[in-house]
Image 1 (cartoon, rainbow, N blue to C red):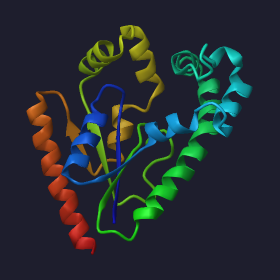
Image 2 (cartoon, rainbow, N blue to C red):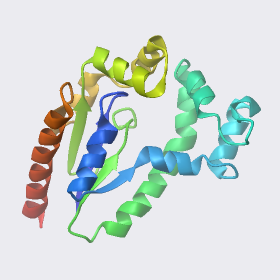
Image 3 (spheres, rainbow, N blue to C red):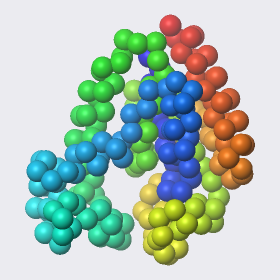
Length: 202
């Protein structure tokens, strides 16, 4: 098994890169997907979030109002730290279980972790791939895809690690400033590099 961390700031295109790597044959373990599972009503994480932030972060249908919660934590460092303290240990426990399930296989296992730099780095990983794009392009993508106000997007970006902090962890940086065909070509090249590293470690 080759364990690869994949990260990138909001709007950089990390999720697209994760999808392309999965199409090449990688096992992708998606931290955001695990977060959504853990935040379902009735879970320990859901209860802890409501206890900390109050019932106003619960939507009318009883689920977590992720937009309202994001508005709170991206504008308040203490609130963001409190949320991370609830969510991150639970997410890493699930990720560890899923890694253990494939650790004896001859596979490239990609950990899709948006906040890899913020969570303390790349300990235990064989390689880190960082997806980057120009700031204005990232803002435009998020506005188009999620309908957020540009200033809200910039506030979220400011709450994340900087590009320099992410790239300091990187073995490979993918620049996603062009056409999708350019991104696909870069991912194909990275995939070959990862497969070669897997072969060398066997």
